[in-house]
Length: 183
Image (cartoon, rainbow, N blue to C red; front, side, top):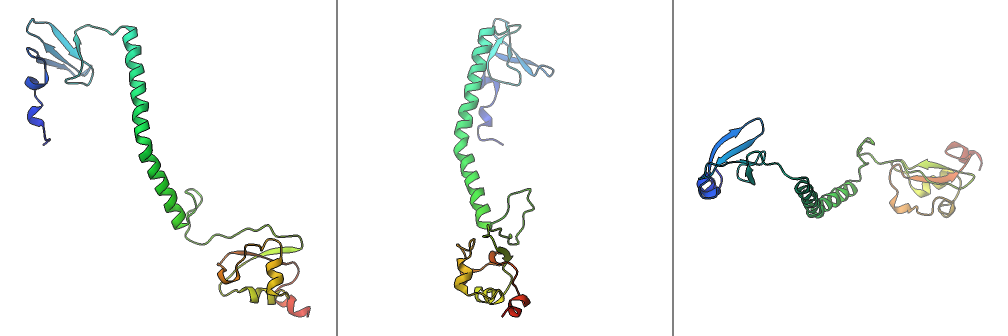
C-alpha cells in the first residue's frame, strides 16, 4: 500500500462542495457535481486533474497552447534524460572495448581476429601461429630478424609481443622447404 493512500480520497482531493457522481468507461471521464448542481467532467483518464463544465470544448487557441506546452515539456524531459543515456552508452562502449568483442550482428566471437596488413610489393602476409617467433619466421624465409622488421607493413611488429593470428609480411616465393632449398 502506498505511503499517502490515506490522503487519496475525494474529500481531500476535490474542491469544497464537489462530489464525484459517475464514471464513463467509454470516454474514461469522471463526472462531478458541485453544490449548485452543475455537472463537471475530468480530462480523459484523469481522476483529479482539470475539470470543465459538461459539454465544454477547448477553443483552437487553447488546444495550440496546450500542445505547445506538451511539446516543450516533452523535450525538456528528454534533455533531463540525456546525461543518463550518455552514461549508459559510454559504459557499454567501454565494456565492448574491454571484452574486445565484435559489434552485434557481426558474429560476436571470443576468438582472436585475423589481422590484415598492407604489405609492400614483393611480399605477402602470413598469420602468426602458436609457437611462432620472429627468429623462426625469418629463418624459414632466409632473412634476418632485422630484414623481417624492415619489410613494408611490419612497422608496428613487436617481436616480443606476437599474438596468434597477427599478420606479418614476409618475402614472396620463399617459405618452409623453399627457404632451405635456396641456400
